[in-house]
Every structure is written in structure tokens, then in C-alpha cells.
Length: 146
Ligand SMILES: CC(C)(COP(=O)(O)OP(=O)(O)OC[C@H]1O[C@@H](n2cnc3c(N)ncnc32)[C@H](O)[C@@H]1OP(=O)(O)O)[C@@H](O)C(=O)NCCC(=O)NCCS
Image (tube, rainbow, N blue to C red):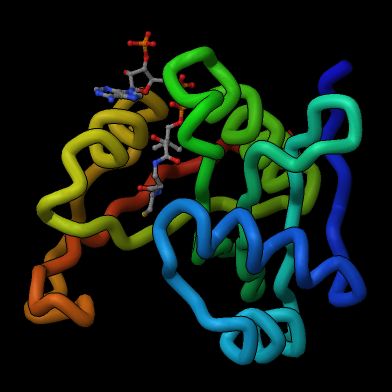
């Protein structure tokens, strides 16, 4: 059975395990400091209590920045990313957020196509943004609040 749950700091290991087995984006220490930021929300997509996707977003006033968005490799291209993103969009609308922002590597065409699917538009570029020296595209989606 599929479910979405909010994750708090006591379940940091779930986050770190999914991260380190997929994109190796943050160390455990970085996850811990992410959880401590004000306005951070962490949402997990579960199938029978196993986490298969995680989204971290940071709410600041009427904007939210997606800081982490991953689906376990084994479950990709089956619509789970869409499920998680649709949940996130609804959550943001409930919170009266007007704009969703994110950065995606210039080289990550899969993720870029995924975000384009949800009408995220490229609004800028951050040069030399990632550890490997690649640039990031800054993308945003305008939301209509409910
Ligand atoms: C990006 C990601 C979250 C997509 O999750 P997913 O569960 O595979 O996505 P979905 O199955 O819901 O796909 C939705 C749409 O995204 C696009 N998409 C997804 N994977 C794609 C791929 N490999 N190539 C091209 N388009 C793709 C398609 O438009 C797809 O729609 P379609 O199935 O009608 O063609 C997943 O690939 C992932 O976790 N990637 C690694 C982490 C990452 O790069 N995160 C972003 C960091 S900024």
C-alpha cells in the first residue's frame, strides 16, 4: 500500500540511506543540519512501510525551495515521482505558497524533463554550482493558491 508521511529528525537514517544509495547528495551531518533549519519539511513516499521516495522543501514566507527530491532507482519511471510531486504541490497550495523553486544540474536531463512535466520554467543559471563543477539551472513554478 502506498502512503505519504512527514519525516522528522528521529528518522534521519531513512533519509541518509535513500540518499547514499541513490545520488549521494548530503552527508549524515548535512542531513542533520537540514532538519534543524526553520521552515524545513521532509516528506516520504512509502510502499508498505518502506521508503521509496523523499522530498525536502524549505518554506520561506510565500515561497518554497525544493532542496532534495529522489525516488529509489528500482521504482523510477512508474509514476511515483509524479505522485510525490503532486502531493508536494497540493501541500504548498494549502500553505498559501505562490512559488516553488529548485536547482537542477545542467547535466541531469532526466530530472529536468521530470520538472518540465510540471511546468517548472528555467529562470536562471548558477555557474559552477555543484561539487563536480557543473552548472545548475534555477527553475520555478508559479502556484495558484486555494
Ligand atoms: C527525477 C525523478 C525523481 C523522477 O522520478 P520517477 O518516479 O521516475 O518519475 P515518474 O515515473 O513519475 O515520471 C514522470 C515524468 O517525468 C519524466 N521522466 C521521468 N524519468 C525520465 C527519464 N529517464 N527520461 C525522460 N523523462 C523522464 C517523463 O516526462 C515522465 O512522464 P512519462 O512517464 O509520461 O513519460 C527520478 O528519476 C530520480 O529520483 N532521479 C534521481 C534524483 C534526481 O536527479 N533528483 C533531482 C535532483 S534536483
